[in-house]
Length: 187
Image (tube, rainbow, N blue to C red; front, side, top):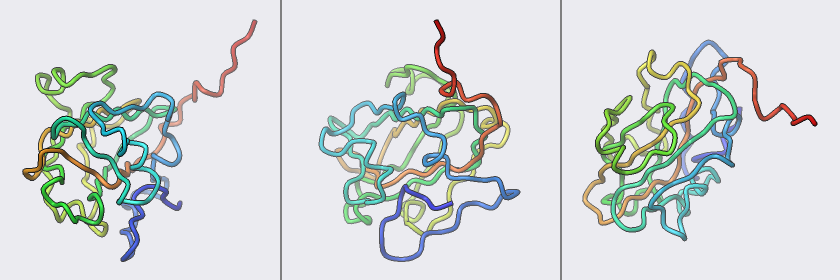
């Protein structure tokens, strides 16, 4: 499956993580865009830019280095790995996120919740991890089996006043449940 997120030009992108043949890039196939949002995003560099394939547009924070991205899927999915891409081919390395916390199936999270509650998984990122040809970060298998939503908290960066991301890819597969968007109201 061709990926719509994170194509940044230049070298070839790494292939998706190998699974049993049913692994897909979930942003392009299962994302419920009407339910997704980002807190503290710059009005000129919104989270939706993460999925258009140009790292120069990407996502930037507004007031400080923290971002809170809420990703919601149409159906329950198993998430295998996640790939963050650098903003604008890494021309501003101090804007790169360095610590990200992931929360599974948490609705209406705020920054205080993200700072106080234990994360499902914490990811420490280096500049190398954000390169286009870097491998996606594998997630804890048992914690990401029945995922309806993921809250992504960019807690800290490499020293900049704001944070920026160029792309986001999430790999996994649908669990095979009913897609509630397919039902129509009756009566």
